[in-house]
Amino acid sequence: ALVGLIIMLGRGLGEVLTETKVSHTLVHKIIFGIGINTEKKAMLGIMAACMVVIGLLGTMAGGNAILAPIVLPIAASVGLSRSAVAVIFQAVGEEALILGPFTPPVVTLLGLTKIGYGEMILFAAGPVALITLTATWFMLQRIQRRTKQINAYERLENVDRFAPTARNKRSTAVFVVLFLSAVIYGIIAKAETSYVAVVMLGLAVITGLVGRLKFGHILQLVVRGMAGNVHLFFLFLLLDPFINFIELAGGFKALAIVLKPLVDLGGKTVVVILGGLIGAFGISGATVATLKMLHSMFYPMLTKLSISMLAWSVALIVATRVSNFVYPGANMFSSLGFAETKDIKSMLKNGWVVAGCQILFLVIYSLLFA
Image 1 (spheres, rainbow, N blue to C red):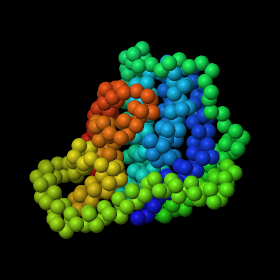
Image 2: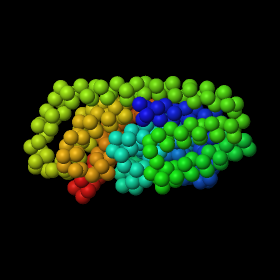
Image 3: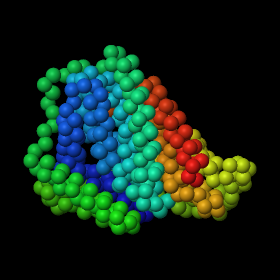
């Protein structure tokens, strides 16, 4: 219930950041701070903006909805293809969701494994994201060369661009300082999960007040945002009795028996690899549900074999990212829509390359650290 509440509050904070134009101001600062005048600079700028905004808001659809009106005219001005922009929206968005401190996958992962956010970033999510972004960068160059003539945006001149006001800049500065302070303190103090809920509500209220929103309006925005994720709250509540039912029915014991020959053959390494592959290709659904389901399925073997939670975290991350890259789903189609293209072939090409790199990393990591 606590994890579900935090995920709801994250959506509420996102509504406040959108209303006060903090998200828009961050995108503006990143894009124009880089000084975009070439294709590669445009790619880097859009990637950085995606990482920050989606990592803060915790939703790809919400983040890309803010990004698209700002970055598409810029992409058009330097000749980026629609296909390249769509690939950026999805590939970077997927990794932002495993790096942002308040995103649903991160909150769920930390709650299940009990590792710290700093550890998770340095030894699990960070390396996976680095490998993904590196592979995507090289694929982007190929996709851009192949599609810049056949799937281009119309060149736009004198585009009306978002220009942050003094109030927007002030709200953004306050938010960034408070956000970084809260994250650093939480890492140093090894704060409990409940700390995140207090931080998110506090950030929403203070940022809203600095942005000259009335207190009542801030609460309305938070409640409206929370309502958008209420299904995840009930998902967490209902998953627990569902998992208990499977356990009492002997499902997890049966799984252990089926996997026993493989575990005897490969030990800890096989358990970690199997967890990642079963999640990637055998379980389809919401990320938080997949994380919970996988952890419950494998927990008896994890404890019996004393498997490192960091290695298991990598397995969980790969399990939930690979499935989004290799199968056309909501994240892929929403990215195509925001980039105004139907080139799913480029998305899948990048997705399968990224998936291969992530699975290879999981195998190597499990051999070394499980």
